[in-house]
Picture 1 (tube, rainbow, N blue to C red):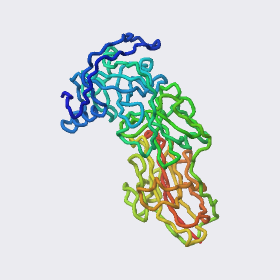
Picture 2 (cartoon, helix red, strand yellow):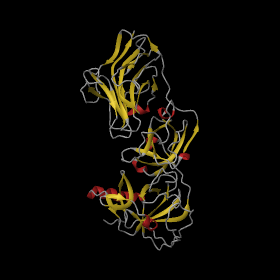
Picture 3 (spheres, one colour):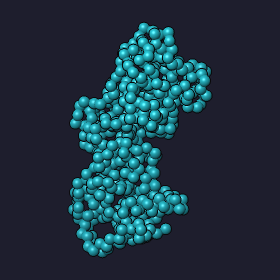
Picture 4 (cartoon, rainbow, N blue to C red):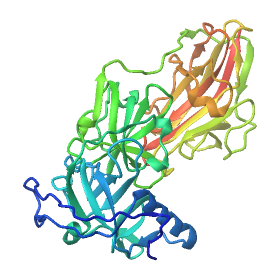
Length: 475
């Protein structure tokens, strides 16, 4: 199918463009591109129109690959840099240097590319003979290789990619994590006032960018916003030269390429180098705690209890005032039964993401509203177990400003309840650990208690937590 439509093509006749061929000495053998006089390239198509043509081809004919036979071209500015090894045999370009823009990935069988196509370099892409298709679920240029998309061969690099003399400053688009959309894929963005999750940078085992034993191909870390209750996966190649550098502890801004993961099902941000992580503040924005301490025992009045015996095995936890909310991934809290070496307590609740295929799993199990003004001496107790928790975590949270609407969970203020004893990864998987009597008597008003499961971002490494015998009591 040829791409040629007055409604999708912006026709620009190029008279003469002189391309600069002055580059630094390279580390690979490619022919030095001579100054080229172009007369003319053909008609220009925007990145947006090229994507739209592919989507139309998919919708109309079911073809996910579209070969371009017209003498047309597109232009853009390079935003990726493979100097540090965090990009490999690909070039990311976007249509403009500032503001809202469109991005596109180009597969090229050359490494490295940065000495010819540095960040900010304006390039013209001669499209005739190339194929646009979905690669990791994002529109990508390359050569057709059977039923898949392959890279542009080294011998054809300077036939299809022509360098302008312009090297412009790229101004990343400031954006909140919650504002990221599919239309912004493969553009250069800046996330402001963010930090890495506390479990990844604090404690006895702070993580590197991508140098952990469980990191395969990419190290995926959780980057959190300090101004909204949202997060995004920060991905680093295990071939990057900064993979063994420790993650910074503070907070600040991150600029990089907004993209998908390898499977095309999770938003990622990928930096060109560690200098794009600009953490200038040492004070973190970790959640506050509500800590009334521990009590000697529970009171005689039961305000809420859940032993899960009325739940249906294999189904998500429901009823009894529960809110079962999946923030990320495909897994949720569900009922299960096991009478083996990792026996449940009758029917119990569990949450886990092992072998889920998801890059991130976060699941909330939230109690009904509790009125703390109507009672005295409130306590909470429960039991937890694990099935090799590994890189995942289970936390206990409390909110007084959540309105009970699942759509508003992430906008509410949630504080940690640190006094509860929760099963640890090195506890024997067959044991059930008693939480102790968590004192809630210092809390006033009404509120909700939540058990929040957070996976590490490595689905084949995360484990499972189990929960049962929950009681909230008062004197």
